Length: 138
Image (cartoon, rainbow, N blue to C red; front, side, top):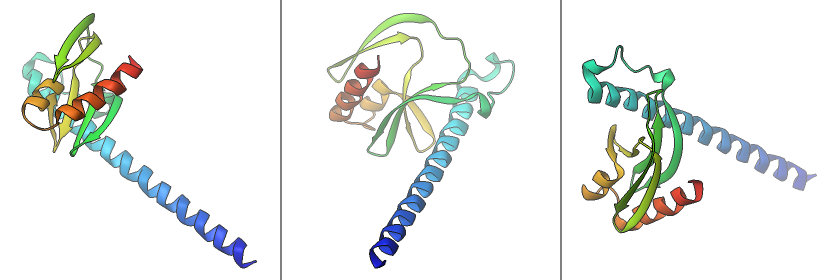
């Protein structure tokens, strides 16, 4: 009977921890969406008919967090061009299939991955890890 109680308590603690992690992840996604909407409005200013709506923003792909920076593809229902774009970043080759940039997000700011590497936000090793993950999904 004691073993059953311990097992039940352990299972309950595990479920509570998973629930807390899920809530943190949702808040983190809400923040990046808000920041991306503001970033687009700053980038395009008067070129858009109206401000970017947070509900239109999505994290398309998340390649992980490196040194406090999150590497992502974002979408906000903007037009993209289908093309094959090859970029060399820190000695790693990325082949992008459309004009949507890969962003590095840190402290409410977005930089394209090459700029983030050049600014020291992420290391060469980080770029290599992102490239490896990206090539698995491309």
